[in-house]
Each structure stands twice: as C-alpha cells, then as structure tokens.
Length: 189
Image 1 (cartoon, rainbow, N blue to C red):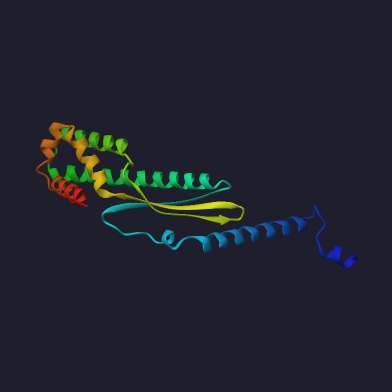
Image 2 (spheres, rainbow, N blue to C red):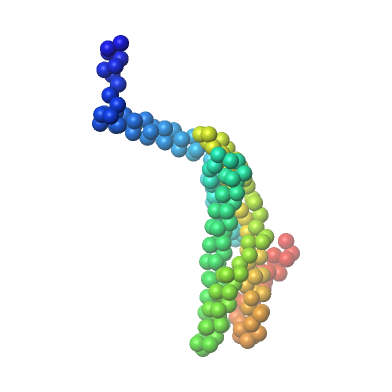
C-alpha cells in the first residue's frame, strides 16, 4: 500500500499538476484522432467544377440539430464570401473590358458591384452532402453546399440592367457577352 501511494504525485504539487496536464493533453489528442477518423471522405476532397462554387463546414454540439444548423450557417457564410469575391471580379472584368475610362462610368460600375455584393442571395444553393457522427459525447455535423455559377450571373445581369446607361455601355464588352452566354447555358441545364 505504501508503494502505491508513493507512485502518485501528491495533490497540489507541481508533479501532480504536470501529470494532470499530460492526461488532459492525451485526452485531447485522442479526441482529435477520433474526429479525423470519422471525417467523411467527401469532406476531405475539394470539388473542382467550373460551373459551381462549393463551401464546406463542420460544427459540434451536444444537440444533433444544433450541430447541423451551425455547420450550415458556417457553410452559407463561406459561400457568401466566395460569391462576393466572384461578383467583384466579374464587375472588374466589365470595367476593364468595356474600355470606358470616364470617372462617371467607373463610379457606376463600382456602385453596381457593391449593390450586387450586398444583394447576393443564396437562394439556389444545394446541400450536396451532409453527415453527422458521434464525437466524444457530442454530435459533429459535416456539410457541403453547392451553388451553381449561373445563379450569380443572373443576379449580376439583373443589377446591371437596372441601370440603363451602364447596360448600354457594357453590352458591347466581351465580358458581358460571355456572361450572357453563361446565363443561357445555365437555363438549358
């Protein structure tokens, strides 16, 4: 009995604190390893599709639905950020391609870009994959959303068409013609 007592550090000593920290660290490593082994294969891969944007997210909670809701929220947020970047790039292409250098025209282009970025609607996204796994007394939800590029092109085109002067100036640009082609192709799918 005396030997057993000597092998454990006395509570309150630095050795005791160190042992507890090591135990906690081992528990964290074990949880991480379990989480990694439970990660779905589709979540580990980044889809490459010129016709869509993808966003993935994961979240854990003691409540299954809360885990799913939080993961969906994070994925939608990521998708909105990607869409904003895409809109800004498309609007810049219009400005560059149209070869109109007046300050008024550039101001209109910028205003439409900002308007579209604010008005970006995530309507049209699809939950491509989802999975919920048990993880150390919690539920971990994995989700992947897909957003067809044709949807954002429609939003951009409708915003530009609201400004008749801008539309007239952009109609001749190659970027605008390409956007129109992409919208038509998306309608046929």
